[in-house]
Image 1 (tube, rainbow, N blue to C red):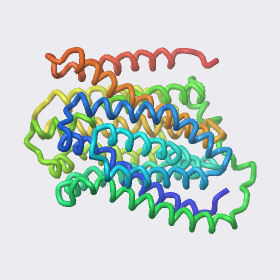
Image 2 (tube, one colour):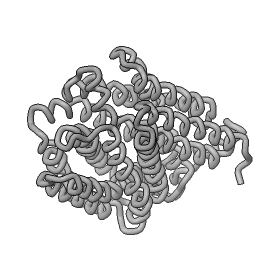
Image 3 (cartoon, rainbow, N blue to C red):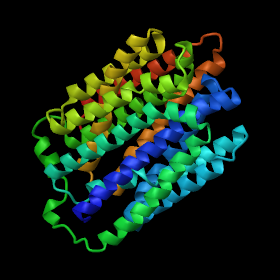
Image 4 (cartoon, rainbow, N blue to C red):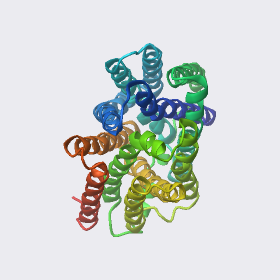
Length: 393
């Protein structure tokens, strides 16, 4: 059990992690476009490689944290990410940039599953809902802020800033983590009666679908949401170029969906009526798919803003479902956090990979990546419906 003030410190670590990871990874696509002439194909491939690595390692990272200690796992993750970014600041070739990104992703695999588990460990159901709500708002707000200011940072401070500013944040995380580990030596164990899982039993009376099946459906839907998000993010530099936006103004206008997602987390945290309700999950999935298509197919700036609001709110509910059910139904928080993050990695890999393949084999159809990803989203919805009507084994 962690002391309450230690968990407050973990929220600070989470916010710093969100800022650092978003500043580096989201603006790496702009950096690759400016420095090496990357178009949609190259950036989609870069994103797919990152997702593939994260998919393979995140589950191990969560299991490692469960067995060897959360703070130890975080120390490894922050250290590896900091070293990778410092080395990356000297990268002058495409292979070196790929190597930096891969090493950084390996480190990140030890952080997000562990942060989720640290917040959720041995919490009673009512408090678990509150802590997951705060957790989601913190990381989503950090990501939104990072995307909003990242373009201006890139323009004003130069390309090295996307490596060195996040590296400095990771070093600061290590310092804060050392202090929190010292405080936590005085923590006491929580009574067994407060282990999470009671809310899943109560919720099972709200729906004919068992809680374990909701976990399966959410773990399916969330990779498809990340599939859409990460088929979108690598092509934002080209979308913004078509609209005549500099990186700074691209950060301003294309961060709308990040803020919409953060706002949806606030609503979902305070209102629990969506828990174990299939229609909310299914409705969000459809809205997410439609928002994705409009963002990439429509060239009007204000349509782009409106579509981002819908898209951000939809992926917010899907993500919240995956994390909440993972923590509510499962008792081994580190391992379930690893499953949740590994599923995210699968989506990060699949969306860009399909988009890149479509552009590679159909270069004469510049929108083929959108239709290919849209087809995958349709398949995902059909599988989601099939799970809904299947009895849990």
